[in-house]
Image 1 (cartoon, rainbow, N blue to C red):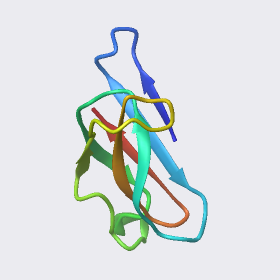
Image 2 (image 1 turned 135 degrees about the horizontal axis):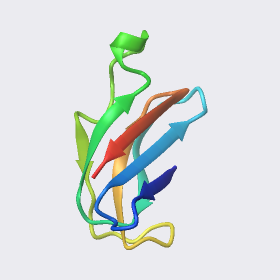
Image 3 (image 1 turned 135 degrees about the vertical axis):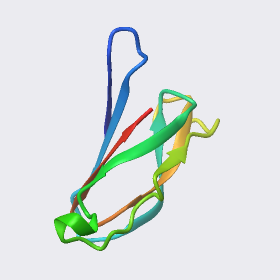
Image 4 (image 1 turned 180 degrees about the horizontal axis):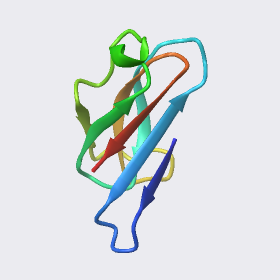
Length: 87
């Protein structure tokens, strides 16, 4: 996973890839911002021939430190997929 943002830090993009053949549910990842992350791409979506399971449109970051970041959230990660979020 990685986060990219502009210089002003008002446009944030989060990319998470699950390159294993295993579903990951409640998979917590550290995040730099306390906000709602809206799912904008799920490569496992039905329109791409996938199962159409994901994060119900997005996740809310929580005040739980993880991976050296001040916040984190739990994600559903379909197997062999990429999911992209904006904040």
